[in-house]
Image 1 (cartoon, rainbow, N blue to C red):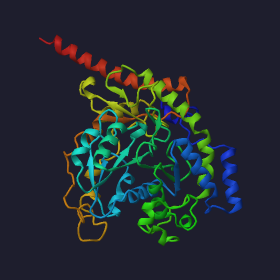
Image 2 (image 1 turned 120 degrees about the horizontal axis):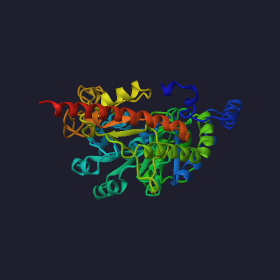
Image 3 (image 1 turned 90 degrees about the vertical axis):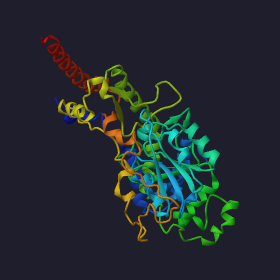
Image 4 (image 1 turned 120 degrees about the vertical axis):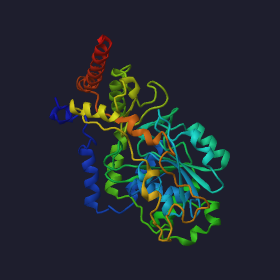
Length: 432
């Protein structure tokens, strides 16, 4: 039985949920012709900041733009270094290259799949400006330890919350924990506005620098009151009306109108996702070879919308069956899954030899005081993701009878493999 192609079962995966309320909000913008305005976006920003628990939020055209602003706001520039996990989407860090900085990639924790705090501090030098924290697949990173390291070295922490809208870390929302955060809300994410992003921060200076970078229409008459002393000292107020980053990052109000509606229903909808995903893993508790990639249920931490859902694989518990073979068997049984996660960025040629800035040198070494490029074997956990993780169905609705069907596929594949191995072992023991 091929469950994923079953029309009835498709409802459990349908996302985003778009209702007449979304459609009417979008149509109102289209009919008013205010797609390029900011009044609705500012309302969305206030509501988003309230939801995340920060003083400020700033809407952008996409998540990449949001992260680009955070890098510049944190002072990242020529000759600087940024520490970032290698296993993430490229937008988590490529803006640093565009600003003339280099990237020092850190390894990840094999259980959380987030940046490993034990692999951060030794990478910090006098040119390190920021640590990028990706809450991978909705799992909140160990922010207490990371923030302590950052404070010791006066380094900024940038959260990439693109996987983790709504994720809680010890009762606090991801996106409110570091110095500043950026998130994507494109159509594939758990919080969807169409194509958009958001910056969140409690730091007024960082907010104003983000505005100055890519929101020219707000600099002349910012609704965030008088610029801070730092902004004044840099005379950024002299450049009003022209974006200092040479870009226009304004959010289209078709997206912000949809975003307001989606955000209103988001807590309830992701609560159902969490219930469904936790049920799936509860039913697989104790099954050899696979582990849940999740925070402990019934704690002050959550997986948010559980975007990019994964499981952890342990081949040694299945007589060495590779993760790739395991995924092939589950797929053949009717549930298409894949082994691994994001491609390790530190092995991509862009971060080794591409002359992005046309200096005649690779961008990673163009202005750096040292060569931090990393080859194969430098990040042992990240490079083993093909063997240690696998994708799982991302259930959007809690329908136990359907989820149970998927659970049974995983159990049947593992039981069949174990039965086969046991028969083989018994035959060997019977040989003279």
